[in-house]
Amino acid sequence: MAKDVFTQAEQDAVRAAIQEAEKNTSGEIKVHIENHCKEDTLDRAAYVFEQLKMQETELRNGVLFYLAVKDRQFAILGDVGINLKVPKGFWDGISDIMLNYFKQGQFAIGLSEGVKAAGKQLSEHFPYQSNDENELSDDISFGKN
Image (tube, rainbow, N blue to C red):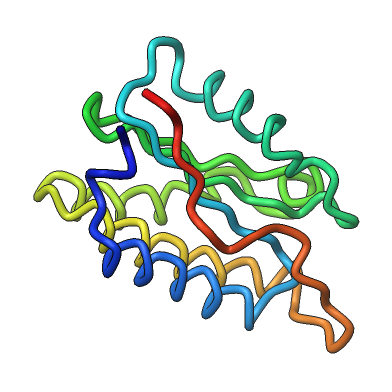
């Protein structure tokens, strides 16, 4: 099971990174981890995005960090509200940061650093609002495979 790849401390660190990132932005960040991805990574991420109901955020500003650990595939998927505002290649720098850690097998650190970088960049387009509501759980979701 994918959950077994991450210790409780690593899961806590990723959750803390999500909470830290969301202090700076009204964007909603979610991490989903599976062992295997048997289809195109972006297609699978889009399916998971929908299953997690991330498209239901008020400003359509959800971001999914999808990781298939054993297949060594990942994707960052932003909702339409984000993609309408951010420049082309917005996620490339964040992907590069994460990939450097992933290549060393440091998946939790890579996810944490990517999440924090996303929060920082998203704050420019979706600043934190005093009435901001946490619309998505900060817990990591895990696939069954």
